[in-house]
Amino acid sequence: MKMRLHFVVAVLFMAFASSCVKETTDEQPIPSVESIREMESEVLAIVNAYRSSKGFNTLKYSEVAYEYASTHNDYMISKGGLSHDNFSSRASSISAETNAKEVAENLARGFGTAVETFDAWLNSTKHKETMEGNFTHTAVSVKKDGFNNYYYIQLFYR
Image (cartoon, rainbow, N blue to C red; front, side, top):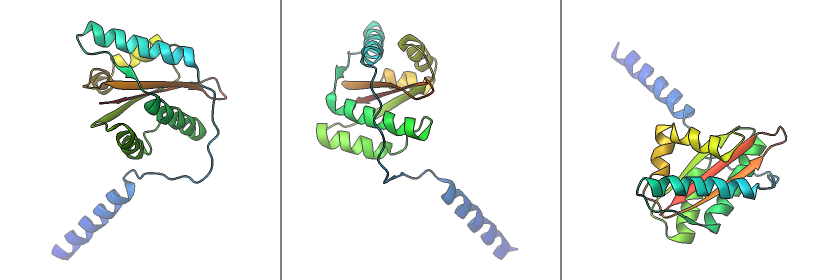
């Protein structure tokens, strides 16, 4: 019985280990999709207005964060859905380039306006915590896929 228990535990461990999310490193080039700058600015303005109304500092725009947000948006569109794939790599790169101590991101898809996206984030505990987090810089990327679905990513760091 003891040997059988060890076997079951080993099988369960292997099943669990193989189901863990792994960083992907796709070698294929990812096509770039045009950004929707007006909506990007609007999301940033709404988030900063909200932060200010709650007594938090407003976030400064970061070109470094924008480049990573835009690239990840292209990646998500190429995959056809939202994902935090390669977040640790994005966060490490942003940290290396900006000396950031903490990096976070909020994602959304399918909302037609900046206000709808903000409201969805506000009504999600984790997304709201990120928007209210101890961050100093941010960038927002908004793009649309071939099916007219909007993809949003906001990166935060301090």
